[in-house]
Image (cartoon, rainbow, N blue to C red; front, side, top):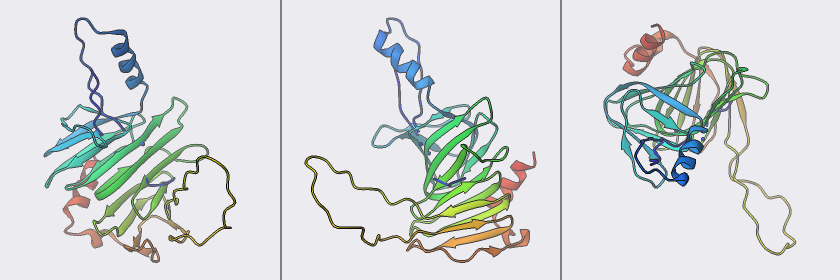
Length: 247
């Protein structure tokens, strides 16, 4: 039996529960094999209550040691902290009252990375193992930004009003406007008007170490600004993540 449960920063998820039982059909075995081919993330730490599940599907409670699969969304309750560990050792942590969709989590034996997730709202902290470049990518998306990592430690705060704050502690992050979805056309070809102005302006900003970029609810970025460790004084989420990274 397969239960689907679920998490773009620029540089997708199902949770699968496998149960062996007598009399399994060939179709069931095929579904299990297919699930094993998907990219996964391990719940390496959990403090509080969190659930995972596919869009529009049933959710299940997460526990430490569980597996989250591409296509699933992780949702956390108040006071909850979840750490997801990738196969290459990279870490993504999800804060309280957050929602993260895992879109892609492929890590090859030759070091290539294909990671993509969307933070709908809440807080995320990530520490990426190794540099990201070439055909590899490590992305985290929000409604108003896509952050592409180039080997780094970073934080993203996505608020319910769609404003975003990207903070980089090591390395660099290329932050850009998300791609505008293209309309799908079916049926007979027809002549259409030429290109028209799109609602969201294209932009890209490189955010370096100990720099912070604020993006407004309207999707417009500010100018990267320097910050110090003292700026985070009193922020329990940052302090906890730094302590975890130091272990």
